[in-house]
Amino acid sequence: MWGMPLVYLLVGGGLFFLIYSRFAPFKYFKHALNILRGRYDDPDDPGDITHFEALSSALAATVGMGNISGVAVAIFMGGPGALFWMWVSAFVGMATKFFTCTLAILYRGEDSEGKVQGGPMYVIREGLEKKWGDNWTYIFKPLAGLFALAGIFGPLPIFQANQLTQILRDSIYIPQGWVTANAHMGGDLITGLVLVVLVSIVIFGGITRIGKVTSKLVPAMVVIYVGCVIAILAAHITEIPHYLGLIVTDAFTGKSVMGGAVGSLIVIGIQRGVFSNEAGLGTEALAHGAAKTKEPVREGLVAMLGPAIDTIITCTMTALAILVTGVWKSTEANGVTLTLNAFNEALPEFGTYLLVICVVFFAISSMLTYSYYGTKCLGYLIGADKQHWYNYFYVGSIIFGSVASIGAVIDLIDG
Image: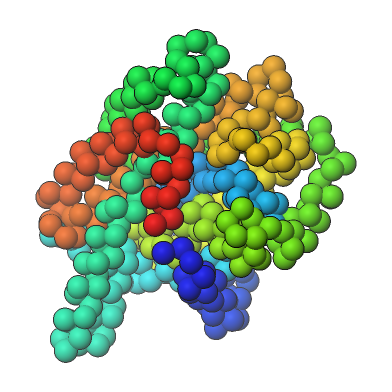
């Protein structure tokens, strides 16, 4: 599902939005920051959470393991040039998020309990179906249901659980002698069970509790992680210009282990970029659709900040840390282990523990928001009073992710 046709759709769609709007999202970047700071907040507006909490909830899902291990996977599979195509996905993704999240507010609907909701299925029902009339219901109603069904399985936290378990195993369990490299199922299972307990405490409280937790957790985890990476880059500051140039040149000449063609490299970069910022997937519309506002464009402007923070800033810093330390040349390390090696090389005394703390924050924050996406999709299909059933299925998938191999998880994500 992640072949070139979908790349054309995601990148081409984003470029169309940019050109059609005459780059409108970027013209109001400063206004977006003012909205985020709460200058226009009105507690009486419809919705459940503030602009800042909506962005924090969306970022909790996107500023996650895709920034730490997703970038490492991209570099391992496609070389430094993969980051360039992640930048492309973020640039056009900002426009995509602007429009999708504007529509999420413009065409909000009500669930079976009468509560205001937003998301792709409501845009189809409240926008397309009502505009085109009853004659098209036989197309739009199943289409909305199809997107809701995809939203049940797409947000499962398998990758986050897998990578958190992997770094705990490689950095703590094995060095302490609690498990071995060939016998670690028991330790992985215990990690999964602990994650289930921690995540369950928050997700069964709904979007209000998720928004309040992530609004505090996301800024803290970004500051800690960015601070660590800045320290690594400062120690190798003379090498940064070289690798920035390599990222651009390798984007058109690099060879990936997936086939050796530039086309494969583009697919890898777009894959990991979209996995990181989720622009065009529709999930972001679920979080931003819950914002307290009567002005759709305001939420669209807030939403477009996501790819800038997530991919252009955070992913770039991770990639540079991996590149300047030289660990990317290893053919054995993959995923979060590659990032771990970069931290160990640059911060040998405490790099491991700092990254473990960051990974715990990133992984758990992602899991909190993903659960909200799935519950809203299930609620659309079978009724809001039954949507909490999804959380039981959701926490069960955490166990699977904890004990599965990274190869199996990547294959599952990429379809």
